[in-house]
Length: 254
Image 1 (cartoon, rainbow, N blue to C red):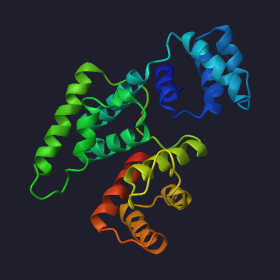
Image 2: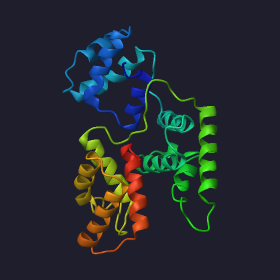
Image 3: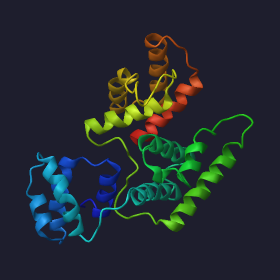
Image 4: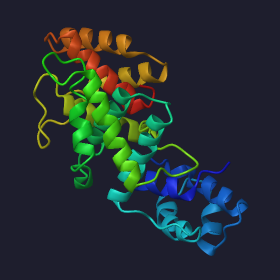
């Protein structure tokens, strides 16, 4: 089954689309019965001219009857697919909050996600297993309520899933992981103007482990050892495990 145009449009806006794949999608949409000059030209490309692909894509998308969404609309679509998976029983409430937290880190430059329910779900990711807080049962109830409320306003799209953030191009994965590491800023040195690559030494090893299917414990152990050995600091297991779960949520397997 072809990738639905409205999902591809959301991925395009969120920066999670591999541009080189767009001609394949265009060819599928032609086979589905859509037609138009931009769509035909896009389908005929081999994927190497990314500039031309980007120029043709909005018009080709319009020839399928779908417009390029705003960043807010794309983010809402992403959250709706995640919320629907919770309602369907495919994931649990902790996973929802952790994936939203990873999404907020990944797309922190979007003002559109600094509002309900993104902000609330992002904060809830840090409330699990906390003594003296609301307790996991209450946190889960709030997550589910926020998701149902979102779905009442933004129905989940049919035909696909947008909730894996990491499986774009290698460059997109690197940028996304760098943003997560800088947001964590485990040794407190990140500066968006003068120090943005302090944690780049962790990127390739973490991507390798994620690709190999590493779990939270493996990732946490690697982070603890590397922070201690490379940065000369000690970080508690609770903190590294929490970040490991956030990495898995970003990768789409948590």
